[in-house]
Length: 269
Ligand SMILES: [Zn+2]
Image 1: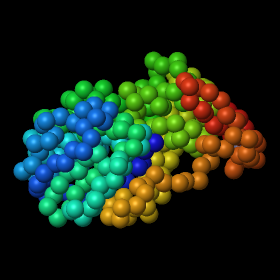
Image 2: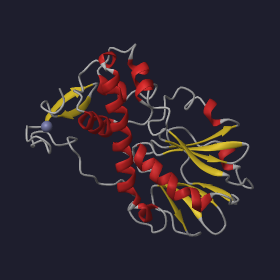
Image 3: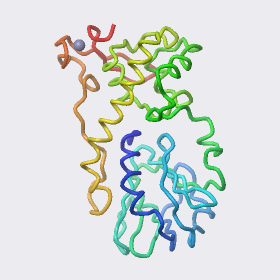
Image 4: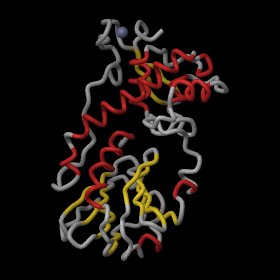
């Protein structure tokens, strides 16, 4: 599943290739994604792309009077291709630009292509999203303040998009390891010092993943290959039963909110 780093790497790949270009047409081969592709999306021709932004895991193609909202769902990927590139079975949507096209491939069809007139921040999908983890807004004081009212486990708190947006299962486990915090600790027990360590660990973990993805950028802008979810080396994620890379203790796996959490009980007290 594409996580925030994949979406941010996609944004960085798309932005310079789409900004300033005029949309010449829209091709919908399969309108039944997570929500049906609307008539408004089909009539985007003539608009100019001002910028490609991101909010959480949503890509926002700024068209001046509104935004095309793109979400990759469980299996989606976006690529910029030459015009006339034959479409595969799962290539459901193209945004045409004359000399190139933006193509959404989404085998499981949990992705989304939506039009949001006006200010996209007010769209029902975006209005309630929490703080951006890579922004300056997430610092020790903010994380400390956000956690005060929550007795839920810190791992589940991190994954709640209404508090902090875009920290998925992998990055929650990895950030807590880096910060030396037990994933079962209650969120409201987080001290200011631990808030400092954790906010820094979240940013470092996401930035490292984005950097790892940078090298695979060509795979999803250009060649019609397998689009890029990148492989990384993890501290604890998916390493149950293996030795901790820091202390050698056995990495543990527990269930939290129906998701697997990986941690080292020695390093994360
Ligand atoms: Zn350890």
